[in-house]
Every structure is written in C-alpha cells, then in structure tokens.
Length: 219
Image (cartoon, rainbow, N blue to C red; front, side, top):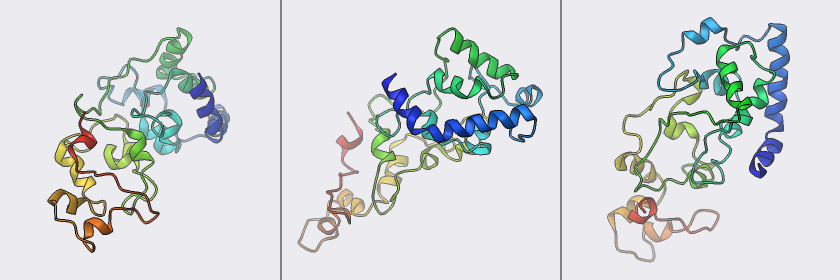
C-alpha cells in the first residue's frame, strides 16, 4: 500500500483527468467512451476482461506508468493492482459490462487474472527500471515503452508487435546502437585513442555498462 500511495500522489494529475472524464461521460459528451455493443466488438483474446489500451493510453492519454507503477523502480513493470482500475471506474463507465467485471474483482478483493503476453525466458534478466531510466545518446529520456512493446496506445488487444520480442538478436540490435558497444562486442584492443576508451563514459561522466557482456542479461 505504501507504493500505491506514492504512485497515487505522483499521479494526482491523472486522477484529476479521470474525474473530469467521469463528468464528461456522465454528460454524454466524451467521444472516447465505448458502449457495451462497441466493447463486444473487441476480441477478448485470452484475457478475462476486454481491456483496451487504445481507449486508455491512446484516446485518454493515460501515461503507461500511472498503471504500471513499478516500471521505473523495479525489474518488473508490475501488473496494475485492481485499486488503480477502481480509482477511476468507481466514476467512469460504470454502466459498461467490462467495467462491472473489474469492479466485481475490486469488491471481492481479488486480483484480475491477466494473461501475460510479453515475456522472456527465466534465464534472461530484463530490469525495467534500468531501461526506463536509461540516459545515453540513443535514449536521452529513457527507453520508451513503445520501443519494445510497439504502438501499444493503438491496440485494443495487446499483442507482440515484433515476433522476435525477447530474443537475443532483437535485444542486441538495440544495445549495439549505444555508442561504444559495437567496439566492445568486436573486442578491439584498447589504446589511448580507441573508440572503446573514448566511449567508456557517457557525456555526463558516468561509466557505461557493458551492454554486450553475457552477464548483463543472463543470470
């Protein structure tokens, strides 16, 4: 609950947005709202609830980290706790069948049994917080969610945007765009003026991790 309170405080703007949306929905003027008939058109896939990222992250521009509250501080992005869903849907879309399913989980104090779509093997270490908080020439503001997950804000049903998601070659394609990593991979002998030595630190003076070393990604 401690983490939830912190996330709730930091996401106060998003909560305010949800409250405003609730008022708009009540007035019948919000174009982003789906009817039960429209929701029925969304393929349910394997999920217990027809949750649309397009409606939430796209149409209503709710930040990914408002729901995935652990992404910036933990290895896992975290499955959104039901109280985050209930925080908005106590007011928004209460007449929708899918929202009523969500609220039943909330009232029963049970987690929603979401089916994981994006996964990597157990022998692969992928810390979300290292990527979200990355600071380098390639990703000056951190790695955007869409870099790995594709245009998630356009998806009614989540699916792997790239079929190679989580494979070693797919990961290295990105890692090798960071300055100095290609030279490390090729194991060029170091010299005072080698690119490897020159790129050992980021422009702000921090030593770069070796993003091509086996132990960087494997346990």
